[in-house]
Amino acid sequence: MTERFHVVPAELRGYGELLDRNAQHFLTIKDHAISKGGDTAGFTGLLSLLVPVVTGVAELYGETLDFANSKMVKEAQALNKTADTYEKVDALGRQGLEGVATKLDAAAAAPKTGGAR
Image (cartoon, rainbow, N blue to C red):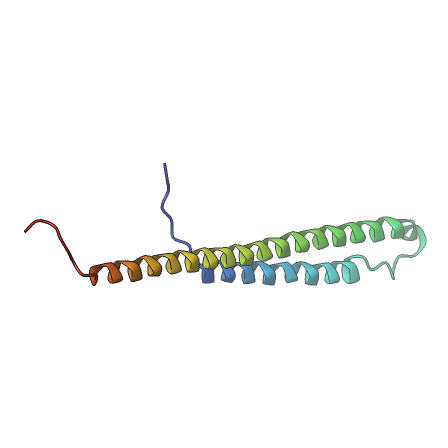
C-alpha cells in the first residue's frame, strides 16, 4: 500500500534553521552554567573540599550540552540534505514528464497514413 504525502523542501529547511538556532542556545546555556554555576571563587574553609565536585559537575553539564548541540546540528543538516534530495527527485520527475509531453506533441503532429476509413 502506498501512502500519499506532500513535502515542501523550504519548510524542511525552515525546521533545520530552527533546530540550528535552538542548538546554539545549548552553547549559551553551557557558557553560563560553567562560568556562573561552576564558579568556586568564594569557596573557603570546608567548602574548598567541594571545589573538585562543583567543577566536575559543571564540566559534565557542559559536555552534555555540547552533545545535545552536536545532535541537533546533525539533525538540522539531515533536514537540509533531505530537502535537497526531494528537490532533485522532483526536478528529475519534471524533466521526465516534459520529455513525455514533447514526444506526445510530436506524435500528434505526425501524418496519418493507411488504416480503415
